[in-house]
Length: 459
Figure (cartoon, rainbow, N blue to C red):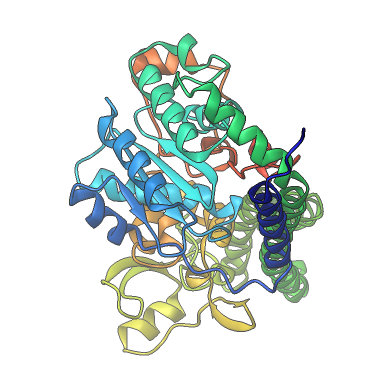
């Protein structure tokens, strides 16, 4: 005799309702994502003894927070984490934000540590205790071999500790490094996946599409800014053409040809841009071309050739700077920044310099206040003059965190090439570029939950 228990039918109905509500909420208009917490605020919490900073709106339950917090406290090496609401940062913003957190730790005397950022259930990581690229790759492995955020973070911490201790082979093994887990838990997870798989798959596809749309919009905005710089450079070349032809060719030919060549090259490089980091190649070319053009202008005006100095901080379209001036952003501390003659005089007389402004969410603001998306833009212009210049003049600005602890500023060579050498040498890097962070996504179910951007697990 078969008895259909009413609670069984009720449970199934509730499960179906939950899945339906999840799908409904997934298609509701999303509120504008909140900005990530200021790195100094996060550091204050970490220094207070809590290795997990949780921003309001994070999807982690109190139980999950406690479990992750215990994992971080029990770690043999120093690991700190930030839990954010889903969609707070894009993949393009993750590296700069991790770098800014690492810079805060470094300034506070914690020069060897690992930082993890959970954007919803997506994991990004960087480390000064490990070689370049290692933290992101370990995050990938943790996501690929675990089915939820808690066990994934436990696995990640274990892998980091193994790598810090020099056991590279164990750190890179497939399969969860947490151990245990229990058959009952696995059956429960599989049961939830079966019931809610369809709804979660819809959610995952939508979230991934939204993230890709945000990143594409950011790239388009910064690319437009660079295109304006290229156009302005070309206009200045055209305006100088007649004057150059009136000078002896031997005096100007080399610099003039270099200016022409860099203009053409910048157009080709801009057309080939596919990723945000590609833009720094274009602005680096423009920096070189603008110096060549400044030399030509000096000869035309019978003036001494300019010194090879960084571009004007206030607007790199102004060309090479002539001297440093003391300047402070609104509400920020004063610092030395390179300035062209016009802007230097304005600042020294108490007036506002002519800022390079860009459009962000329909409003114009200085490029240095436009957020981490403008990291490649600034790095191309100023990176060749040393990381200290960038961190010094941008500290306390929206863009400043993108350059904390960069060292050489490279985008890293890959996990496999030199990882063992890096562990043996004990070297590390906060990164800040594409290959230095990464991770997967503990979405809870579904066929494609957005981890693909970094090669992480799909649930």
